[in-house]
Length: 238
Image (cartoon, rainbow, N blue to C red; front, side):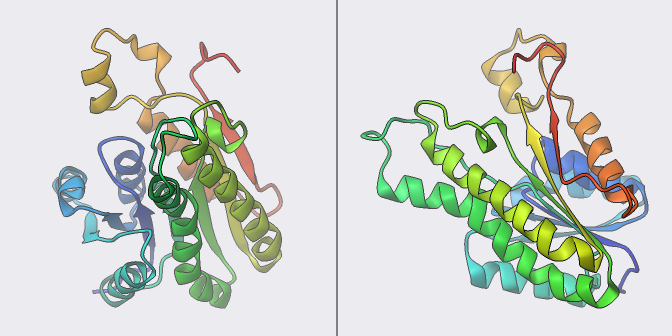
């Protein structure tokens, strides 16, 4: 059965992607959960269903055009045309220019940037037909600054930011809200807690708080749209 309100979250796991999916589900959206591995989606899928929401989980490789096309085809068949796209996928390989390989660099760029392009192409036709829709792209500190040994992340995130700007200028006048969120800091999630068990909560970004901001971006009216915002813990230096 198709839904009148559909949100797609690309890059769902135990952190921000899962929080955004739960927030939109709580607001009455049928939510499509996409990640490379189905296992990454299980917890969020179960939490949404336990709360009475509707979720569709699909294993999709955001860097592969055929996988993205197949996944979105399934979404349209089972849920309907998405009104919201949140591109939250990413990859990171830390290392200097002589440490990272060409394969590392290419795969990171594809996850951090090209996947956003592929996903956007899948949702734009129906959004244009309706003259409405929201696309939110998750950026990072590296969207604005290429730090030493962070080229694998920064190049892709710079590109994703440019993609969001270009799409906003192209599609905004036609009713589609495109926003880019700079996540300036580390998100509170199990992996961080395992690596830094003594880390104080107030030094990390709360994923549910970020998800609330994403929901508010979607709710903005076209006379006052945000194209870019930054989010960080109060103690983060910037």
